[in-house]
Amino acid sequence: MEKYFELKCALEYIEQHISDNCTQEDIARAACVSLSSLQKLFRYVFNHSVNEHITKRKMTLAAEELLSGPASVAELAMKYGYSSTEAFSRAFRKVNCCLPSDYRKGHGAQSAFNPPTLSEKGVSWEAPALIEAMRSMEDCFVICFDIAGMIQINEISWEAGDQALVKTAQLIHAHKTDSMRLFRIGGDEFALVTPFDRGEDAERLVASVLAHNGAPFLYKGQSIPLHLWGWYGRNTAVSVSSDPMSLLHDQMKQHRTMEAQNGK
Image 1 (cartoon, rainbow, N blue to C red):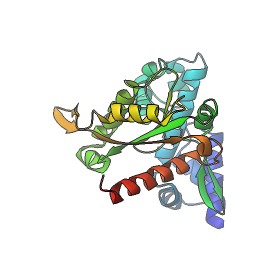
Image 2 (image 1 turned 90 degrees about the vertical axis):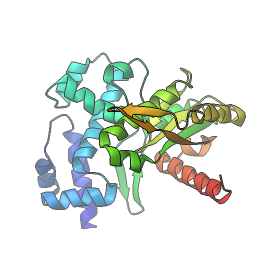
Image 3 (image 1 turned 120 degrees about the vertical axis):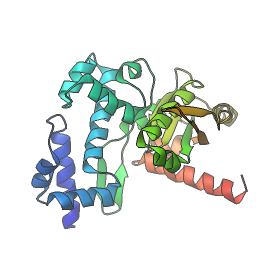
């Protein structure tokens, strides 16, 4: 229970000071824990570092502001503590899969990284923008993609992994329409909210994207093949869930297990 309150205090402090350029030491002090304990706690519970958490939250909020308001890239860079628009744009691209200027034009994948909710049952991740998109297309199909072999790509370079994410978002955009919304729901996982009310239409879009499997992207002159895996299902249960991303992850995992058992 003590660790629960420490983590809760840390998360609340981050949200309250997200644009104050707070340090890990500030967060540890607010949570009344040592810096090393805070870092271990985030790794153990969330499987990412404190700095990764802060960056993802900043870039998720920045993406929302780019879509909803007139703030310039320079203004957002300053607001979230970046010394230059170039540094801000690099961080934004790692999280939302495109540069801020392109994101405002409808490219990339909107990060669904929101503050986690802690309870006795564990950690849940609310995703208001994802839920809103699904409820606006009630009882329609959501299509999920993830990158096969991402571990091997990251072993080449983390930058190669970032490039794979950007390429995946570009590939999905090439087959989606303006009425669909693309979200990044995990490290290498994407959810495309569609207005399709027929499974045949969702299946056709999945097939169109997966038809490009094996096509390479270039990273520093090296040709790296990209393979995706796809799944689709009705968004009904997901749109009323308090933890939509975990539910989508579970459904994807179950489907992949079934495919493996069937030899696909």
